[in-house]
Image (cartoon, rainbow, N blue to C red; front, side, top):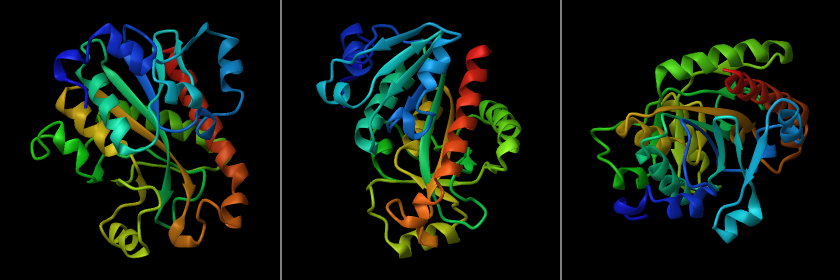
Length: 261
């Protein structure tokens, strides 16, 4: 964890994000941009907006993905996993300039009515992780998103998803710490607790954003369905590629509409 007294220093922001001053709206992603957005999304955005490519001081992040500034919005790659993501969420949530943080990611569905490509925008996340509670009081600050921004994004998502016959939900999500660390028994337990999807970072963002009075929302595209034998590397997963590509188009339209205001 970075020291509290340093998190708003220009040097820290450049090291972590590639820019010395943050903006009101930040869009974060823990995986490659083309996992949640179309492959040509930058080229399409460049037709209407100036795109500034940002390079962080982190050599590991630099090899993986770029960050971008588009209009008044930062697109920040935070890297997969609760450890690195939470540290960066903390920096963003503590920064006085940041007012709104939107998370783009993928999730695994545990239920029948959320298939590959469908989108979950949860209002509550079950924190099956302890790291975020080391930053703020877990009993005082729950991992809940901001209803206003979630409702607005959900309305847009449903409008765009109609033409693709994709579903958009506000179901409960759970954040787990380990990639492929979940057993079938744990997934069934989550399902019994009315959890529809799982991811690896969102509860930390919701908790920290709630603690520091930032608006937050998570847009989760369903990637795989482990309880339906549609694991990430399975043939069933590969057969749903078209649906996942359609989901990327929906998310792109959401992002494009946010840039338009």
